[in-house]
Image (cartoon, rainbow, N blue to C red; front, side, top):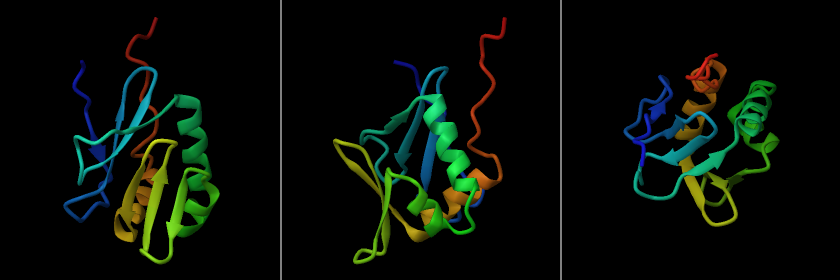
Length: 116
C-alpha cells in the first residue's frame, strides 16, 4: 500500500483540518481528527467539478449549499461531508480553511507523474 502525502490548507490555523491526498487516478479526503478512519475518494473529473463549484460562490456556506456531498447541520453548527457509508464532520473554521485553500488553488489536481 502506498503512503499518501496528505496536505491541508495554508489557511488552517487549528490543529485539525480537511486533508487531501492525490494519486494518479484518485483524490482522497479525510478528517485529520481521525486519520485512521476511512477517507472519501473522488475521481479527478468529479474533484475538478467540486473545486469549480466552490470557486463559483462567495461564502463557505454557499459552497456547501452548491455541493450535493456536503450539508450544513444547523443544530450541530458543523459541516457533514458524506458518502453512502459514512460522514466526515468539520467545524465551520475547518470548512472555511478548506474553502479558502480551494480558492488559493492549493487542492488543484497535480500534473500527471507519468508524462509521455
